Image (tube, rainbow, N blue to C red; front, side, top):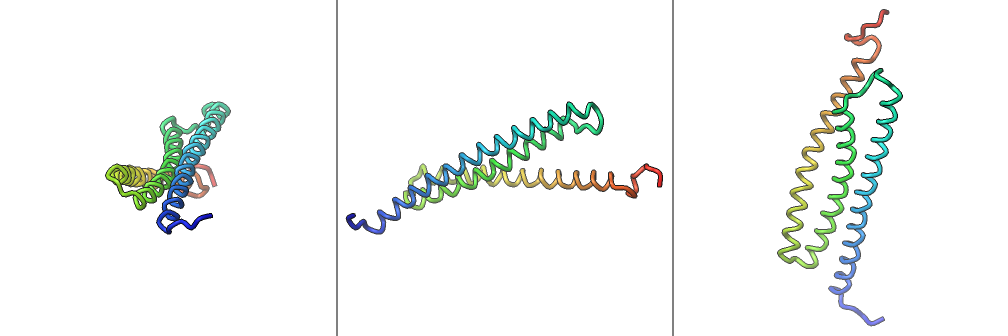
Length: 143
């Protein structure tokens, strides 16, 4: 095998790494879709079994699905951003720089809003858990 200059090896490695990172990004989207679909089916089956007892509101179920899929999309965007960083370092064209900037902005906003929603969801679940614990101030069962 003839000796290749260092820069050519780096370019080849970067191309391979970018392909792997983009593939992982696609896998994250597919897994997120599968996880969200599975959760949706479980929620639908559970809802039909409960028949009105302890039902979760439609909005809360939808929010749960959104948070699940949004988390996976956020992960996919992280890998896509990494792939674009690799591409930009080896071929810093205007198109690559613009694409990198757009993905960084999308990822940042998605993570900010997703983080806020997850935090609110966790606070709500904690409040629900405390409310349902025996001996809590809102517990109406006789002692």
